[in-house]
Length: 285
Image (cartoon, rainbow, N blue to C red):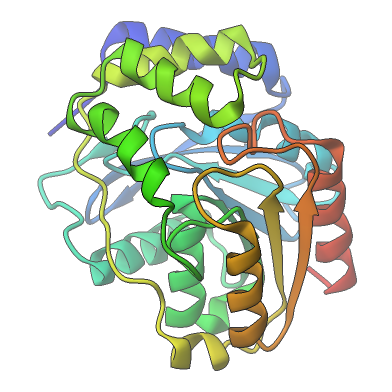
């Protein structure tokens, strides 16, 4: 069983204290794959929204989104099991897509939600889209923030830049990659200290797999909001938008000005959370 060291946990708590509402509630949900940590904001009886973070970033990146949505919704930001965060992986590992779907089933069951709006960034969007195709009856609306490996592949240049960091994730390599992709954008220093600590986090290799099949996407009869980073280096944004438009029956697409893949969602332009709130309200979520 893997767990984080005290330095990582202290850095995590520092971000929560600095950026998150004082009313934030924490919960630990037992699943067949370990204990999942969830940070929740908003009225207990409000419509539920579940947020899934990108790889190696933790649920703490959603601070702006939970503040924007937390008056009208019960917002649950989840630390993915096996990735950096306060979740603790169990003896049973997530090895295939069906495991990932079963883990999300268990998380939603633990939250006591029968239907939710799902919002994911990057790898979290990949998980959310697969889950919507797997269990459409449980998803009211879907928000995909610069989703990777959903509608188009990664940029080759992005993968080549990321390779040293993926092979041996040191602080220096992670910072160099982040600086390259974000154009050396000024990011919150408290969060960056947590990001540095995550380099040594005892994480499992994240589940990777195929894009959702075209047939599954064409059958997806629920509203989808696709938010793309104007300056994303992870993929060709135009290609992602065109593919999503061809495959999804109910998709709205917007490009977030000035954003890069890794400035989202922590340093998102105000348009992001405003669009998410408007989309959820328009679709009765």
